[in-house]
Amino acid sequence: MGAAPFGGVYVSNGLSFATAWDGSMISVWRNNDELRGERAAAWVVRLEADGLGDAEATTFDAWLSASPENAAAFDAAMAVSHGYAANCGQIARALSQRAVARPVMDRRYFVGGTGIAAAAMVALAVAPEVFSPVATTTYATAKGEQRSVTLADGSRVDLNAGTSLSVTLTRSKRSVSLDHGQAVFDVTHDADRPFTVAAGDRMVRVVGTQFDVRRRNGKVSVTVARGSVEVRPHEGGVGRAYRLRPGQRFDHSEGGSLAQVVAAEPAEVLAWRTGRLVYRQQSLAEVVADLNQQWEIPIRIEDPTLGATPVSGVLILDNQDAVIRRLALLAPIRAVRSDAGLILRRDPASAR
Amino acid sequence: MNLAPGSNPVVMPTDPLLEIYLERRTNLVRFFAARTGSLSRAEDLAQELYIKLASRDLAAVTIENPVALIYRVATNVMLDQVRGDARSVARDAAWRTLVHVSVGGEDVAIEPAADDAAASRQRLRQLVEAVAELPPQMQRAFRLHKLDGHSHAETARIMGLSVKSVEKHISAALKSLTLRLYK
Image (tube, rainbow over all chains, first blue to last red; front, top):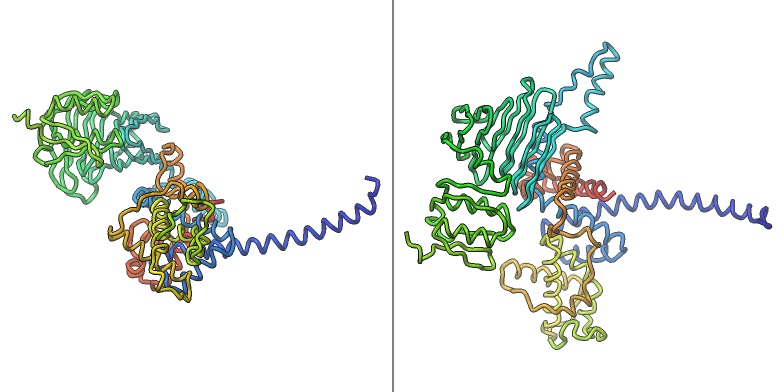
C-alpha cells in the first residue's frame, strides 16, 4: 500500500459515494420492486378474468417488454396464481379446517397475573397463535403410495393410497378429519383425550382401539379390529349413533340418514396394509375404485350393470396388468386398452 | 403461407408482422399462459398464432397498430381452441427448439411435475399458511374467487362490494402472496 494516503482518501471518497449511491438505489429499487409486484399481480388478475382491448394489449405488451424484471415479476405472480388454481380444493379445505380448529387452542392457562399484567397477558394470549397456529398436520398419499405415521400421542395411522387426512392434537382432544381415502387407526388409550375421526357426515369416537375408516365416492365405512368405537352423525346431522364391536363394519352413504352394520373380518379389511385386497361379495365398481387408487392408468367399467357384479376373492397388488388378469378370473370381464385407460367390458365368453 | 416455421434457422421472416410477433413471442406465451392456466397449451397457442399470422391474407394489410392486431388474433386463436375448432397443428420440433424460450424458468411449471410427495405437501402447507395470513377482506376475496371458483362479479355480490374493489383485493392478495412465496 505505497500510495496509502492518496489511495485512502480516494477509497474513502469512493466508499462514501458508493454508500450514498447504493443506499438511495436500494430504496429506489425497493419502491420499484413493490410497484412492479403490484403491476404484475394486477395484469395476471386482469388477464385471468378477461381478454384485453387494443389499448390495454399495447400497454401490457410494452410493460412486459420494458424490463426483464417486469417479465420475471409477471411470471412469479402467474406461477403463484396457477399454484393456487391447481390445488384450490385442497387449499380451501385446509383453510376451512384451520378456521374451525383455531378456537380449540385454549391459551387461558397463560393468564395468571392481575391488572396490567393481565392486560399484557391478553396480548400474549392472542400473539402465540400468530406464529404457532393450531397444530394441524395434513398427511396425504399419492396413487400407489402407502404411508405409516406415528402421531405425537403414540397412536399410529396407516394411510392407504390416494388418501388425505389431517390431524389436530390438543390438550383436550385428538381429532382427525378424513378428507378422502382409507386409513387404519391404532389408537393409544387416553381417557382424557378422546380420539375422533370425522369422515364426511359421520364422526367416529374412540378411547383406545384399532379400526379402519374408509371414505371414498360418498361412502363411509368403519371396521373395528380391537376395542370399540362409536359412529354418529355430526352435531345436528340426521341418523342414529352406532356402537361397533370387533368384527363389525358400519356402512353408510353420505347425505343419507341410514346406515347398516354387518359382520366383517377385520383381518381382511385391514389387509390392504400388506398389499392385498380381500373382497366378499363386493361390487366390481367398488373393487375398481380401490384399484384406481393404486395406478396412474385409470380403469373404467363400460356399463353400470357390469359394475354391480359381485366379486369375492383376494387380489395381490403387484402390477396393474397382472391384477386385471387375476380380476378376470373373479368376474366376467375382459380388459381393453384405450387412450383413456383400461376399459373393462363384459366378456361374452363367460356369460353367466 | 410459404415459410415452414423453423425450417431454416438462419432465415428470418421478411414479413414485418411476423418480425413483430417474434420480438414478443415470450410476451404472447405469457398472455396465453395467464389466460389458459397452462404453459404447454400456451406454447401450442403461440405456435398456432404464428401460423395464423403467417397465412393471413396479405392483401388486407396496412395495419395501424400491429401489436394490438397480434393480440386480437391471439385472442381469436384462443377462442377457436376453446371451441375445439382448431385442432392442434403438426408440431415442428425444429421450430420448438429454435424459438422455445422458457417463461421465467422452473417456477412456471404449471402442470404438476412428478415431484416428491413430501415436497409437494410442504409446498401446499406454505400456500395455505400464506393465505391464512392475508388481511381478512383480501383473504375473503381471494378465497371466494381463486379457491371457490366464483367470478369477480359473483365475489362482489357475495361480499357486497363493487367489482372494482374485489379486483383490487384479489390483485393485492396475489401481490402479497407472490412476495411472500418468492422471498
